[in-house]
Image (tube, rainbow, N blue to C red; front, side):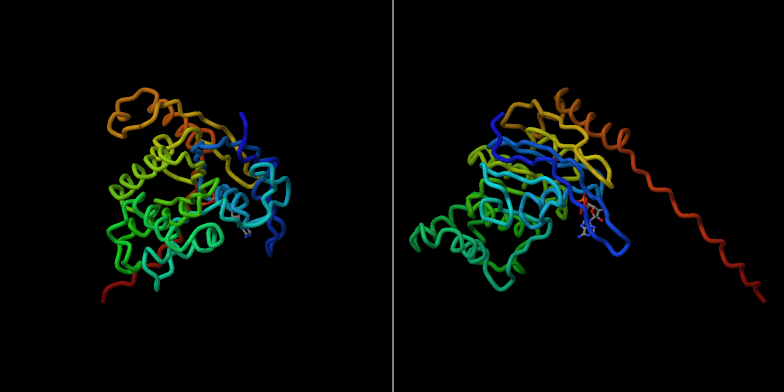
Length: 277
Ligand SMILES: Nc1ncnc2c1ncn2[C@@H]1O[C@H](COP(=O)(O)OP(=O)(O)OP(=O)(O)O)[C@@H](O)[C@H]1O
């Protein structure tokens, strides 16, 4: 496989007040152009740390990340990030929020009119053209995430990085956004790395599911190719044996191989009851 992005032996050790903590060790992954890859694993295993290293927001303490033959050392528009909670500026409209990012990236290449058209096009892609003049307070959580995705796409990133982008949304809104993301991925061929806790979401959207072991010293446990043809239809997949096999494999990894059931704390003795007079 010709890799667009390569993580080589990535390790991350944090200095904490109680000593050094090795969060990641020996993370190796190659991602091809146009691939949709999900990262899944138990809470605290290091998914966001991996994503932040690829985004250039954190510097790996071991190994490194190469994007198109260049080492990632800092954040850049070719690696746009969408977080779980939108990070839109509250005093700007949806249009202006996207425009701000477009100006930063394309000021020298595009005319003002071209930039405005580009902003409008990206808002149309996420079905937000009708609300482009509204501020974040005036739109729903799902709509804010759509604007966040439009802003990220408008930077024309080589890789779109998504950290639980739909985690805070209700199930129906989430399903609509997943469908939009699949359509955008099909149309633009953007390379996507997405963190999710949702096994169904991972199987529905991904070409490969990267399953991470529990920390400390977390690493990639297994990688599952999802051999389902595209376009994918969530209703048709409900009866698809390949879909169910993939789902089963991820669930097995998470709940048999990486089982993490925290012991309940012992209950303190209840205070003796006062006698009623
Ligand atoms: N700046 C930091 N300093 C110390 N420890 C950190 C720091 N950032 C992350 N960690 C630790 O590294 C580990 C991995 O954290 P990370 O946030 O990457 O996990 P995650 O898989 O994304 O978790 P979640 O699914 O709950 O968001 C955790 O044990 C966390 O406490």
